[in-house]
Length: 214
Image (cartoon, rainbow, N blue to C red; front, side, top):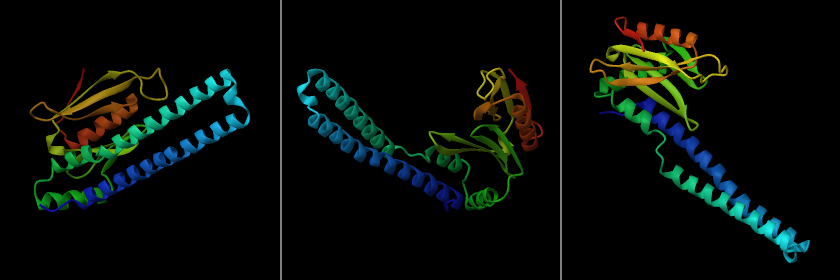
């Protein structure tokens, strides 16, 4: 089966951002030892190494700097192993089974959405001819969840603690289930207005959907 052009472009984009972020952390690893060396030199020139109290403070500072270096090195090592495109790739490949699926998917992802609803600061749900798509952020990385419109059977929601700027306004957790009652998409709408817009989008996706408040 052919590869999705949209997916390849997405993987290239997130991998590029990951490498750029890692490069910034590597620069930090280079700067910290230089700063540490300058601190030690300044302490020696001022006679700080002969003062027990100053020496103790310098050793404490050195300990903190070394800890930061080790922490950054660990984060870099972890980031190298992290596949930031995995969630989105699995969601796409779960839907695309034929070359025709791939072509239709790429066409729809390159066109303007039929409907577009913002349900959070960094979360958007949009509708194409065949798919409901949730676009969101995890650790600074753009992620997507794709489901087929025809698989939408129930839309469940309930009140949740506020995730918006107003702590007094309730947010709403939701999940979408298929005919086998399996959750195929979930998330949080920051307020009631966004929830109403999301329900409207889901009804546009599947007119027979059951909307259930829990």
